[in-house]
Image (cartoon, rainbow, N blue to C red; front, top):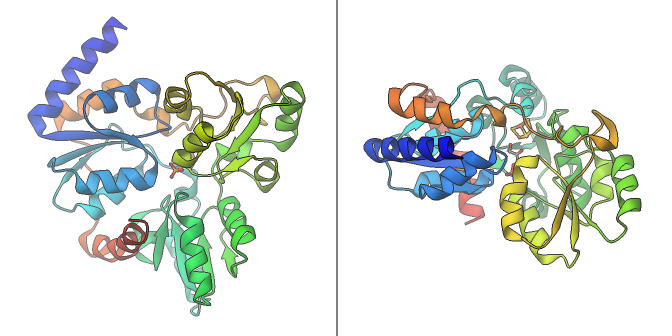
Amino acid sequence: EELKQEKFALILAELKKRDAVLVAHYYCDPEVQELAELSGGCVSDSLEMARFGRDHPASTLVVAGVKFMGETSKILSPNKTILMPTLEATCSLDLGCPVEEFSQFCDAHPDHTVVVYANTSAAVKARADWVVTSSCAVEIIEHLDSLGEKIIWAPDQHLGRYIQKKTGADMLLWDGACIVHEEFRARGIAQMKALYPDAAVLVHPESPESVVDVADAVGSTSQLIKAAQTLPNERLIVATDRGIFYKMQQAVPNKILVEAPTAGEGATCRSCAHCPWMAMNELDGILEVLQRGDQEIFVEPVLAERAKLPLDRMLDFSA
Ligand code: 13P
Ligand code: SF4
């Protein structure tokens, strides 16, 4: 704890020196979230991270999250310096949607509107008509469907299927998945429900369909935190990255939060659901990148300009 406070103090001084602000995702480790709050930065879902970074007056953003979040920040704020505590933090959805293959897929269906999840490379976003996050995906697809548009959806098949079911939209789905959420199992959750019959089940829609089917609330990270507050249940079974427990427990201090079991080690596994790439964001890395000023995110300007169009469309729509 003492060491943590020492590191906090060093980082706070460096942030000031660099005119920098820390933007962190809910899936980062608790101490990184604590620091982001303490320093006047933000801890939020991917949509709010993008908006906060764009609107903040600081000249440097330190993005604690994964690569696509750093790229999105750079695209929205080309004149800001974007630093990341690690440049190795990617995402299985981004990896599972290489731009060449995706472009061919789009070319094969020229009459479709291309909607991509924020968890994609800048190059894939540059090929899209719309970018969405799980906070606004259903509303945006509903809107496009009401205009009679046919949709290409990439890369998360589970989120895609969930939206398709909910809206009835005509969607062609890419077959990507999140390695963290894909591990949740409906059977394990049912066993847990048998133990705690009064518990409500909260599920992020990157989870498989069978898991979404047993949910009392489905939504993005910020929507799940809201659901935890709104639902009357005292005990909540939560199927998303365990990083979320830090802010969720703050929001509902008197409730009991239980991790949904994953396939990995059966119903007893209490730490499987944590994104290995989010976990790469550590206090030491944040301090070092601020001291050295390296590990900067760059996006090729032509690509960035093109990718900004569908991102702006999303931010305007959900403003
Ligand atoms: P949201 O915070 O937008 O729900 O995103 C979840 C996620 O997996 C980010 O990597
Ligand atoms: Fe990607 Fe899943 Fe990690 Fe989010 S939790 S960054 S979707 S691999």
